[in-house]
Image (tube, rainbow, N blue to C red; front, top):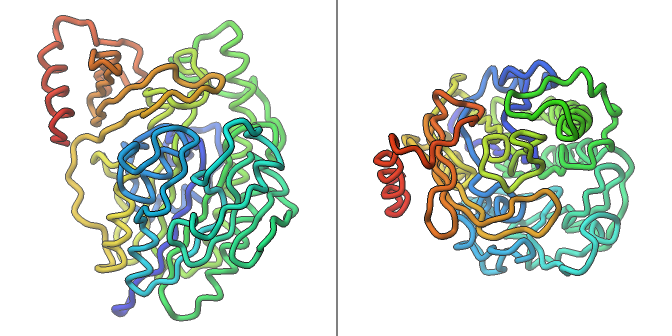
Amino acid sequence: MNGRRPNILWLVTTQWRAQACGYAGNADVRTPALDALASRALVFDDAVTPHPFGPFARAAMLTGVESPKNGVRDYFDPLPESSRTVAHDLNERGYSTAFFGKWHLARRDPSAPLVGELHARVIVPPESHGGFSFWEGFESGFLLNDPWLHGTRLPEPSQFPGYQSDVLCARAGQWCSEQGGGPWFCVVSLEPPHPPYAANPNGAGDPDAVSLAPNVPLGGAVERQARSELAGYYGHIAATDHAIGALLEKLDLTTTAVLVTSVHGDMHGSHGRFRKGWPYEESIRVPLLVSVPGSPAERSRVAVSLTNLREWTVSLADAGRLPQITADAARISMPSVVRLPHQCDRLWCGVRSKARKLVLNEDGSPWLFFHLDRDPFELTNLADSRDVQGEIAEWVRRLAVAEL
């Protein structure tokens, strides 16, 4: 790059689980853009979200600090205006910084509807923009078509026709093209493939053609719902992959580092569960691709989390490369119970490595323990097995003293 500092792009989706990518071996889903990026990127096959629920994960990703230490304990807690984020770091390094899309970290009325135009048009004031010098987006609302946007150039919410991923990627691409020779940092935050699953431009798909994991109960209501939802989910993924590909085609990838991930996954019937908040693989594992100019493609199984992204981005701005990554395990947790349908019913904390996962209840008792190297679909919970109590005790000790 001739000594030039790289531009840096984050592409952050919502509810896109790691298993739902072509490069990960899923034959049901079409992700040619991500597959092409994966062929030249560092692919973290064991990446996790620190918290499998939107606001907690977004706060941790932007600040590098886990919830609730970052100030977000409850689903409706805003990110404190005093919080330092990755945007502050990059501003101080002379980068132009921009955020496009779903914020989900502003102050919200718990009694107001979560879905619909009213939520989508909630104004996020400039002091709540997390330090980004340019901001254009929406609080939430789950309007995956014809989104409402407001911000730096849009003092009042304005509706834009089209699929949300297409609209946001196009507007972000335009901003990037306007930055001239100076380095820029841009976050594009997309709601898809979040529900409603039927709201994708590719149609509902064929539920009977969907392949199900071995941990999805068959022959009843769970199977029917999983097939129906996955058919639409994969349609969202294909449409969003297309939008991402169109944005990447506009950029000079010899001067731009690209990070693609998701804030959490989706159960889709695994273990009889749906949505997120659960500590199972389908909920906590997320795609994470990092393409750095001049760096070779690689598949990595080191333990990484969305909390690493702030440090990595600073390292890219300062040195043009990622820092050394050596962790063998990552912390995972849900800091509170979100009282919404299908979500996890308890607080929990835990730790995941490529071979093991331990999850503790709020009182510290083991809830789940899996040998992931032998049981990747988590079919056998060993938490009560006498044969592994010593192993569990060592993971509990490491978790308590943060030896991860």
